[in-house]
Amino acid sequence: MRRTTPLSAHWGFDRGTPVDRFFIERFLERHSGDVTGRVLEVGDDRYTRRYGHDVTVSDVLDVDTRPGVTVVGDLGAPETLPDGQYDCLILTQTLQYIFDPEAGVASVARLLAPGGVVLATVPTLGRMDETGGVERDFWRFTPTSAQRLFEGAFGDRLEVEAHGNVLLASAFLFGLAAEELKERELVENDPLFPLIVTIRARR
Image (cartoon, rainbow, N blue to C red):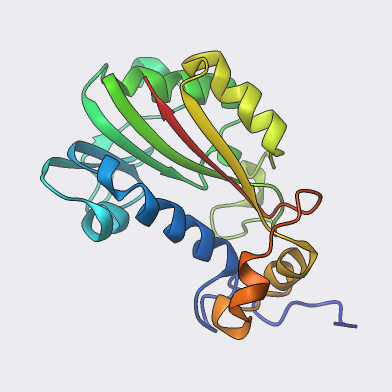
C-alpha cells in the first residue's frame, strides 16, 4: 500500500471485476425485474442483455453517433431527448459527467413513461477518467446529495443505498479487483466510507 501509483491503470478491469462493478451488478441483478418492456441504457446495452426480460425495445443513449447507439442526445440538454418513451432506464456511473446533474436527473424523469423506473449508480470516489477526458469528469456524490438530487424529480418514490468500507475504497483506488478480496470484506458496509451509491426511482 506504500506506493504512489495504482496497481491497475484501468480501475482493475485488467485484474478481474472492478470493485465498483461488483456493487453495480449486484444492484442490477437484485432489480432485474425492472429491466423489461422499453429499456434505454446509457453507453451500450450490456446490462439490458444481461439482466433484461421481455424487453420489447432496447435503445442505447449517447451524446455521439457511433455503432450501437440508437438515441443521440444529452442528458444535460433535455430538448435533445424523447419524452416519456421508456419503462426502464439503466444509468450507471454517468451523472458525474453532466455539469448540471439536477438537469440530468430531470431529463431522466422526462425519458420515463408513467410508472417507469430508473436504476442509477453514482460514485462517491474514484480516479479521474482520462479515457473520456478529465475535462468532462465533474462530480462525486454522497448518499445525501444523491437523495436530494433525485427527490427533486421523483419525490419520495425512490430508494437510495450506499455501499463500501475503507478497505474497498482503498482497493478501488489502487485498482484491485473484486476477485482479490474476500466475500466478507465486500459485503461489510461502513456508512462513513461509501464507495458507490445506488438509486432506484419510479416516475
